[in-house]
Image 1 (cartoon, rainbow, N blue to C red):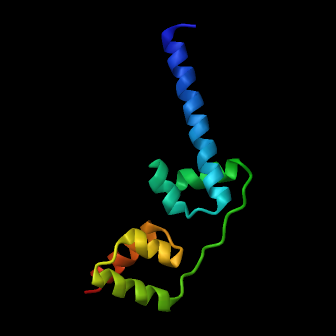
Image 2: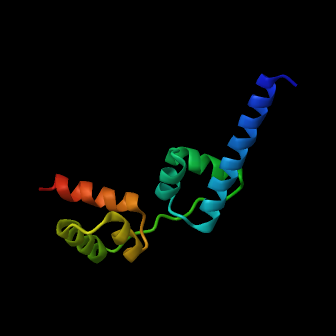
Image 3: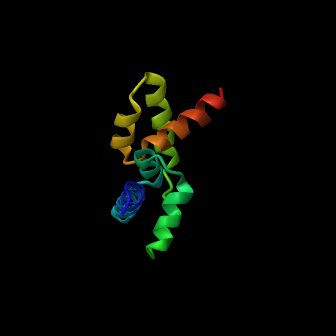
Length: 106
């Protein structure tokens, strides 16, 4: 094998390994947006890999309005995204979305 062929083979191995990690995170129930952030991929990529692995689509988890209101208060207070996300078992990306919808309403 030439150096180029070794390089291409290595790239395919790394891509496969990364895909398997993405699938594993999805199986673990990690929020899709967190997986996207961790691996710098789109939501579509995560869902495509999950479907290719034969995994069922997960139902959307609805966060109660009371929690949304509390998150807005905590954002106004200056709490950290990571802390808010951990406190309510939501993704940091979700907290960013809430911040965006809250700040756009001002």
